[in-house]
Image (cartoon, rainbow, N blue to C red; front, top):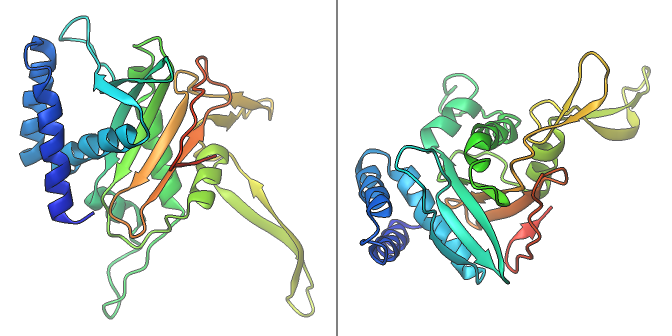
Length: 249
């Protein structure tokens, strides 16, 4: 997303907030968002870009109205086809993602990146927002946005698989004489998975973070942009929503 487009998205978000200026708690959120444009711009951009993305899917979006000004709460209350759900937006900054994936200092001007850290970083952000999602008592989606130019692998299929099933391991049989591999397969380790974990005492799978119905992942810096949704099949409140322009896993 070019800077001119970011500026336009933020202008639209500012105008959207102005519709609720007479509601004191939402007006306070509006002021907070304006401050973040200066002190945490990627966070503010993410909120504006996710709102535009949702409205492009013909989803009605308004600020989530808290009961008090003290509780943690999701960013948006949404409605589509008569069904309501909430959305909590978070982001992985360019600096954070680069620091997480960069392997050592550049060597002769060439940097190496560990792309395996990307799904783990996304899962960490999803996990961090589980308490907020439990507040609304509605289906809840966590939107994880990124504005990073780090050359990480934004492959929707791979990322969705590893966010759900954890880090993957390629296994196979190797001919010890020739070194050739055959009969290869991929196994999910569930290490770093957002919604599942292996119980170390029993070896059985445990369901995690049932307050989160789905995760939306959006790379707004990439060309083309990578945007997809991973559903949590074990959610306490399933999100039955069809997306038109977003890949769903």
